Length: 324
Image 1 (tube, rainbow, N blue to C red):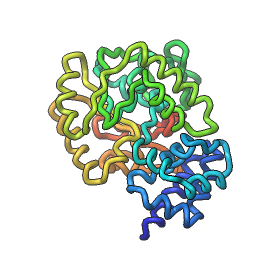
Image 2: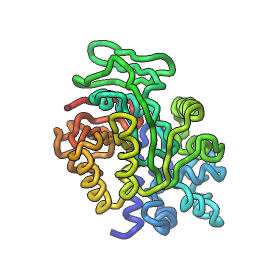
Image 3: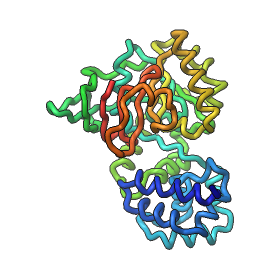
């Protein structure tokens, strides 16, 4: 398959995944059907061809969204190197705190206090499950936990929804390029990564930034494969260590995904930590294979606890389907 054919397939998939954004559906569909733009994107390193990264870089340099595909096309094909440089320099470090509504039921299965260690932490905004309230809508009615601001989530299945907020004694993370919540440029980039029509997500991101600024997490710059064991050891002095990640391992090449899988399973087997994963189904097949096959084509993640699938989740935390 030619490189631009890979781009066509990727952007066609994203047009389905981005159904919540009419702009991104239009843009992704446009790219998929545009040989010139596909060739421009195919000239980027493979890891930099991601739709949200390309779109965010274009928006960062003035392409309006909501806006037409023609404006995006003109900006990319007429780029003087500025947009390309931003794509090469930045990454899709989306910090979607809405996912906490799907992660907290998994956290609740561990004895506290918890020492939370996030892999691919970005700015660390998901390290504050105890600073949010939750509203889970179930077939039996609503389960409400904590005070405002609350994260809402529709629940299918018999999820073990907690009755108390997690007790967090320590919060830290690893990232190749950790973002500083006190740096306006860094937080502006996080806002640019939010899909155009999703004002609610943008407002929630701003709330999350303010929460993190009051109590900044301990973020470490490093490669997860080499840095994780030592950080697990450091975190263990504070409580039950829970290593977690959401939409992160997909950015590793497949051989490194397998290496990470073996590393974290070894840490779990040795009793050094617990593990909560929230990734696309194909990313960690060793986890996906422990649960039932999907009953529909609804895009989502597989939630795993200590290497076994317990649920399917919406990528931004809107729904949780418990299967464990």
